Image (cartoon, rainbow, N blue to C red; front, side, top):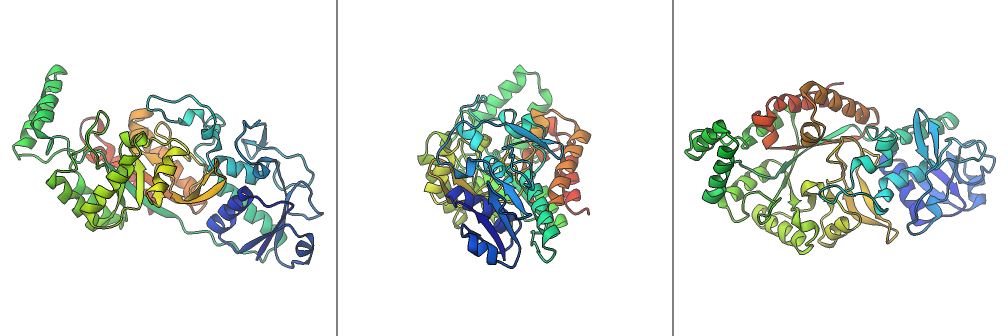
Length: 436
C-alpha cells in the first residue's frame, strides 16, 4: 500500500492521485494529512506539498491543485528532459523541478480550453492554441511518461514497490458520416452531384455515379466488406460511430428513415460495438443529443452508451455536460482535427473533471491519437510521411503501455480519388499494432 502525505486534500488532489495511482499505475494507495500516520507507515510513501518532511520522495507543489474555480494561470516554465513544462517548483530535494501533479491536472482537465481562445471555422479549440503544441510535445503522452518516471523513483527507494500498468491496448474506431457516396442518396442529391461534376469537368465521376446507380459497380464508400476482412485478419474489436441525424449543411449522411441504411447499421452492430456520431447541429441544439441517440437505439435494440461529435466539435464544458445529461457513459471526441497526438496529454481513458463544478463526472473519455483526415486533409502529407507519423505515435503509446485509438472513415478506405493509396496507410497501422 502506497501512502501519499499532503498537508491538504482537495477534490483536485483526489482526482489527480486517482488518475495516476488507480487508473494508470494501478496500485492500492491512501492519501493522508496525518503526520503521525505518515511517520508510522512502514511501506512505500511519498510527500506532496511545500515541505519535504525530510523524506527522500518529495514532490514539490504549486498552487493549482489547492485552488477553486478558474483563473488565468501564469505558466512559467522549467526544462525537464528536453521539454519546457509548466508549474515550476523551487523547494529543495523535489523529485521533479515542476509540479507533476498540477501539470497533469492542467492538461487532462483541459483547463486551457476554459480560457478565452481563438476559435477555428467550426468554433473549435485548435491544436495550435494548446500549450503542448506550442512547446513541441503534443506527440507525447506526457502523463503516462511521468507515471513511469514516478514508479521508477519510488522503486529506487522502495525496491519492493510493484506497479501494475495495463498491457498495450488498441481500439480501432470508424466514423460513418456517409455510408454511401451515391447509393441511397435519392434523385435530388444525385442530380445535384452530377451538376457539380459537370461544372468541375469530373467526367469520370459522372460515369462512376451512373454505374453505381445502375447496380453495375459497388459504391466507392461501401468499404464495409473490406473492413470485415481486416477485422478477421487482425482480430480487431472496433467501434462504429454512426451519424444518424436529419440532413443539414454539414450533416450530409443518409436519412435515419432509410431502411437500407438501418439494415447496414444492424449488420455493423452484429459485428462490432456501436456508438452515436452526434450531429454538427447537436452541439447547439441539445435536444438533438437525446433524439439522435434514442433513434439509433431503436434500430440496434441495445442501449447506446458511446458518442463522438461530428467534426470533433467539442466545447468545454457544455458538450460533455449535454452528453452526461442523457446518460451517455463514454466519449471518443478527445483529439484534434488539425494535428495528431494527445490533446489531453494522456493515452489512458480517464473521467471528465468539470472545472466549473469542481467535480469528477461519470463520463469516461477515450482520447484518440490519429485521424485519417488529419493526415490527408489538414497536414496534407503523403503516404510515407503518414506512415512515419503513425509509427512514431504507436511507439510512444507502446512505450508506456497505453491505449492507442485510431479514427478512420469508411470513405478513406475506398482507395479512390483523393484517398488513393490510403488503404496502404491503414493496413500499415494495423500491422504495427502486432509488431513488437
